[in-house]
Image (cartoon, rainbow, N blue to C red):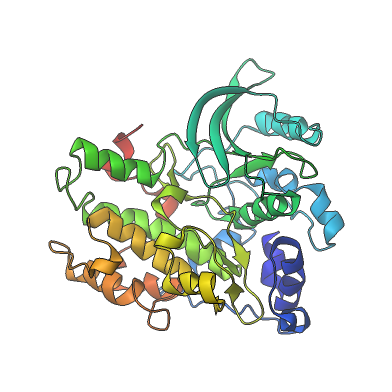
Length: 398
């Protein structure tokens, strides 16, 4: 799937009709074969982190053996370019997550293929995990043939505006992004032809980054003792570098997430962040733009809020505002509108937030440029998935 969106802008513009609502007629006629969002690798790297994730080598998706079931077969009928890519070799050395055993993956694949339209996965609900804008999330347990139990999360859609097309777009967006280890894995979905709809993903046992921020605020945790900053700069850098890698990856594929917030950054058992909730994701057109509003308007970039009221377009830099807002919430009680001063933060962090990310889009850093910022100096972009989380991010569980 990922190779489709690297191949040419012409193919991407055709695919927009399947998983995105294109607003530019020129996109369907573009013949340029280069990616409009091509990025230069950080200094000293033979290739960018994104290129290492989307290559056919061993650093691809941990659970990529689900590439043939996460996208419904109906997508192939809607568009001939939606064909599953060959299964790459999973990377068993990553600390982000463990790959599912082959026998468990095979069993889950068979169960999902047998689902009828509107039929949920035959698994037990263990507990309620949360509620989002379009549905609820539950922890589920599926009995395995060997007597074990497989835990996974079910996103049950309860929004009337969520239809078959929107369901297919969300699953497709998650599968396209799945080659990056810092994106939440989608295992499969309910049949797209009939409501109710459901997504089945990996279970992130440490909850969301929002949960952690609230817990430190109420319990007096973090370097501020219950007051900002809630995270020391080592923790901010460690988390932000991995979210930035996920954003760089999806931007390189021509996608804008459009809802980057602490609520949509989950935490694996290892403490690594996982970018989630691709319901608002869109593919850019031939000019690298998307249209319309999405996500939480209160925390959206200025250009996204403007699009909600007066139309207009924007690009991948909208996600970089979201990253800046996430980092600001980790270290300050102040909002962007307050003109935060960030006392106690390093000059590098203040500069990144107040002069690099939380600024008008024409001044804002893109994901590639942000990697070069001094705040991320010393980050080994090749080894992010092999590094253990700082102790405070590993031990603070729900």
